Image (tube, rainbow, N blue to C red; front, side, top):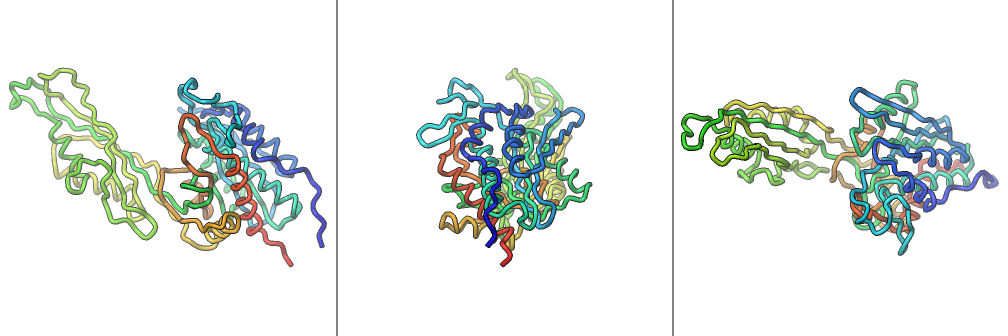
Length: 399
């Protein structure tokens, strides 16, 4: 029988969550968060590497890549320590960067999204290494960015490019975004919808409302164009624009702004503008949607300009070995078999999917980005045990 490894103790996930929350790491500031994490991982045997990237027009971003082991399989945990601004801090029950524990919960910005998941995985890795030792037959890494909540330009995507350029392959990845709905582990994200934003400008000719025949009012055309994107002419208030697919709900469109900038009631404006967003499934692409949109606008006619920006394409990690392994770990710890979902917004999994199979598993997303963001302490511990179970199943002991 192999004696237990008597290395450094695993970090406590609650204390580490508190320490991370106390770093006010509002994007793009790191505020010491990555150093706190590296200090917890290095004693366990992780090689911790800071990667700093920048690009014109964007803020420089610090990232952390920590790895133990040199062989395969290589399981990567991806996440972020940057957070959104807390807003009016006087509206918080406790200071947002204090990391207060009260009523069985940790309170603070990033408690749910997603410093607690980062801490839970660090604890899980420490416990796994303590039980198995550093020679467990593969590699474990953490890819932690400070650029998830903002542009996502100098973060995960560039770390992945750097790893690929030097020949480091990832075999599977878990992203620790808060994916659960009602209880920890009840939902695993196995894909995400794509996102396409459109900015429409419809041009006309300004004039006096008493002489509309001497002007060219662009607003009726603007309204007809937007209605043309909505089945049944519903005006774009979240309509379904296709039937969906086996793992995805129907694609939806939402109009988010209509702007004229005309303060005068007796003036026909020269132009009107609108912005809309489509969240699309795997039956569509950004290019095919662009064609679909322009065909409908052209049918209305008139002078218009359309700018389309793709935030992400849809992707799916088909149910199989990775999804089954993670679902089995959840069931073993919680007694619940998780549902597979592709709902929600975008995450850095959209970058990881180009390099390895990826799923998202994290805490309940009830308070993300809210005032008084908080998470029950016991749920952080549950998540740490799930992550440890995933590690055990990813690197089984050889009998």
